[in-house]
Length: 417
Image 1 (tube, one colour):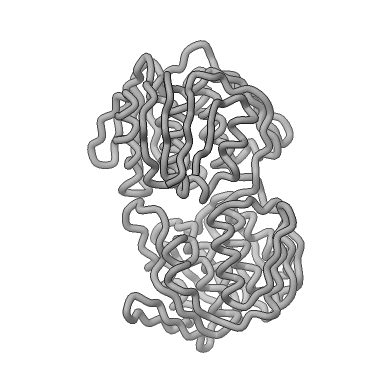
Image 2 (cartoon, one colour; image 1 turned 120 degrees about the horizontal axis):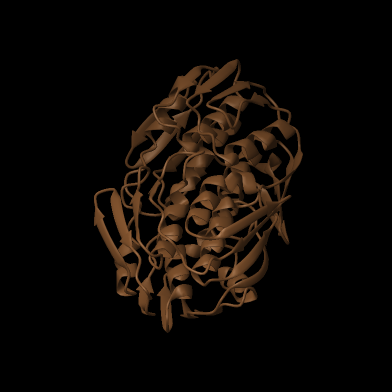
């Protein structure tokens, strides 16, 4: 099993360019299936999840190539409508291909998705929404079997502003007849980026970023060239890493407006943050302070993906911070590993109470999920002594060459395969 060996206590300093957003590029890669031709995707990060998405496209018969940070997809050769269980198990976001496959092939077949074990993340919202668009969906032997039938636009009201369901509806509705309205749509910036891609193909779609998205269906999509937005979760992670070491860093190629709740929390913790066009600079204060309360919520609330990296930072802050996790049931799995490093954390249900300690101590710890894994790296950077952080397949899913990025900022980190 691969691992990081990290000698903590070194201040991070310097500049770092933030790669393209994982949570944006995945639905955009699925959307390339709608184009009966070539899509050119720039700022496409080299992540494990992206490589799986490219494998799915290749399995479906598309021609897929990468040139540096550009991925080129030619979907004119698409010849299949199924995704094998081996790929579905590796990435929960693979369900994102469902709507696009249905409208392109007229049918789809896939097993239920895998991914991080963060508790129940049912895809019933996806299934019920696609059913309202006219898709016949059957569940058989752990598989989802879909027939397009006569798809037609519809008003779809989501019980919860699910990002994945919103994106799946957008992909399917773009290519079916009539008008579709998504009410209580997810409002994340990644939704806006997907809308921008679809608009560039010629789709008539508007409202992303708000709670109502309107789509006028069409039967064709033109070849497109698109640049993926920066990864706001990666940016937040590196800000927390710098803060835990008492460092000073500048992030390049970021969208500060997407990080307002995170930067507000870091400022409350004693950091000084300045923003410029496409840049963020963090100066860590002389002493980290606790934050009154962090409550994860759908965007524009505090992102659940930043809860665990910020918790790692708060383990060294003076005072007590309360974290309330409202999105996923099992998003505190990193806590037991932080305790091994000397953190003081109590968990009861969806609440974690973090009381800062004077120091963390290096220890062998193991990642259990993507963002929890990032939290362990942050804690190791701020600890005294050597930490061995294993299970890097998790962080490889969402951070491009994390060890190289941190080394460039002055961290003492080595990757051992």
